[in-house]
Image (cartoon, rainbow, N blue to C red; front, side):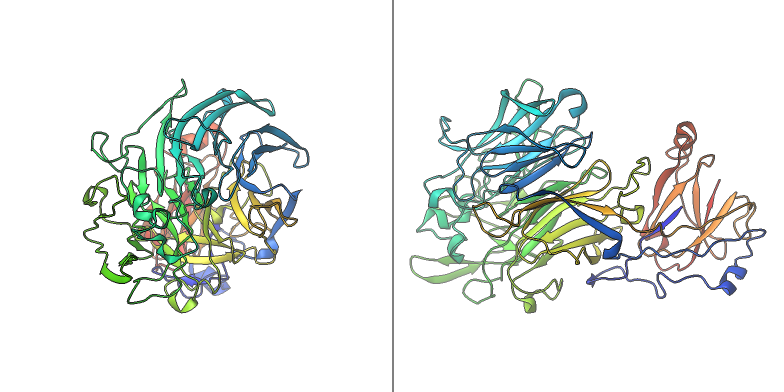
Length: 581
């Protein structure tokens, strides 16, 4: 099978350009020109992103303030509810039970939020939760914890709790508001990521740098190298319930006035994070500030962002946002504008700062990969509509050819990143170029009226799970749901090849087929073959798979193996030949 990534509807194409005639059916004259001796290639059906080929099934109606989900390897689904309940859906997709309940402080943005499954769950049954306990005797005051629990059967053993890490939260500030984040994710190496918001007053733009009011100053948190708020934390949980700090975090472990747990700093409201299990890259969805207009007094407009973090990074807030556009420092006591923050030399002179003043050790700020704002005239780089915003990100879809599930999402969606806007009810698929730039953004499942999506996860069967909170904040909503998205469309991008050897311009290959790539090809190496090779129509080799990684595995397992021919090798080549041997 050759899977062609050729979506028909694109809201945005940037950087990579689509070749003319993409998705076309090969004319009979062109087939003759291939000189494929004794071959009869079938017409290929282009892979088109069509909402009708995907089905949404509502699994749970009106869950009570769902926040985050985690799929278990056996098909069960866990999700957290803000007021402290952990729910479990059995693999039958029908039976719901309560796995456990925590006593939490649930005012404003507090409560039970993140959940993650240990990569070795099959042997240790460990689950991680991020929550705000109702009472917290921690010597630094009440705050948020990330803890490990053991799931015995369908029930959490509450006595098994191992408290890993505490983050102090100012509960007296506006009842514990705001932007406390709380998403969890794990990478294949067993590192745990935890996103924490900057806990500043969202009701006024002065949440950036107000030196008169502490909870209206994000320099004390997001811009502070010695504070875990406004950060993404990376730690490695240990078997005894402690944690270690992996190499490669933002600051050296011995650097004074920094926290070694920090992986990324300078975030405002990182409500969603996700790790690509193939690359290990971290994705962050940033709900941006409510600065709706750029101005001489305040500087840049506020953007919502999708950030790709391939290594430890400073993301810029509250100094910068979006494509590293600078905010202006402002004296709220004297009511006068000060200097624009300098992206090349960020300094935190706030009286509330307990960390480094010169932020050079945090590195050059990383600009957002995708960014948009409330008013579409300021979103020209990524024209994703108009109105309220709340940017969130989910899984990078990874196709598994070994799965027998007929409703798994298809191979031509492999590598696409799911993101959405909680306020605008739009799900989108992001495609990257080989050098990690935006190739295109496509709308997805526009035929469904969503209601406040808060999480999307890929399940072990290759489908997507969606959690909807609804739109009444801090209260259960009648439109809340847990759903599954399945693929019900016909196979596409396949070319049947029968009885052919030494096919024309690809001599020595047992099978030859044609394809019209746009964003690369997902090639399924059949049993009995070792490698896949892509040629242009003149017979020049463009790309081949590595035999050590594909052929022996395919033969020994007795099954096919999917490899990816990258767009960088095929860009602009138009029609190509694919051979296997």
